Image (cartoon, rainbow, N blue to C red):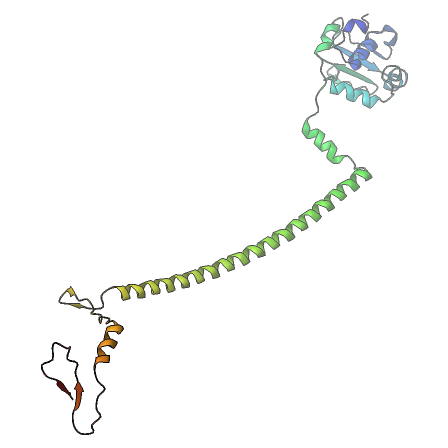
Length: 255
């Protein structure tokens, strides 16, 4: 008989206790090895669950014990006798490829199955929610709804502001076009003032501007002339200054 200490520290407690149960000759009336040592039998399930399970696993639930066997890869066998199936409900046989009599070192190769994420999610989905967890979820949902409504309101305000900005931009563009047209007209008008107004024979003719005579010289010359004599019928005679070089006579008749 191999004790639990001989199995090594790498063997899970469930497997070590199961090995001790099967190896103990005092429990052969309830659990024992098969004749070939590659499986074990559980006899009288009710008595096994009532008398042995509480001493090793601290419970008397046979279904939980079988579920643990399945989690470690044990499978239930059905014996064949005399060409027919013999299924005794009060006796079960389990086997595992690394659970052999006189080979306790193989127990280290037995690993517990890892629950898949899909089955775990299904179990979580079917598990009932606690009231406090439900209240927490509802509170978070209300908070998310409030934040969503606030975001919708801000988004609507931003949309209206954007539309107003686009309208203002369109108006500014129209004003800019009008101002550009006015500036172009002013430039064209100034160009027409600077450029020659007419052309003769393909040659440009400059516009003659009157010469500006100094007003002081004109006033000086006019002061030398005498005031005219008023005559209703005859000509007007002006007395000339003797200093005038261009005049041949003393008097000039102005009509």
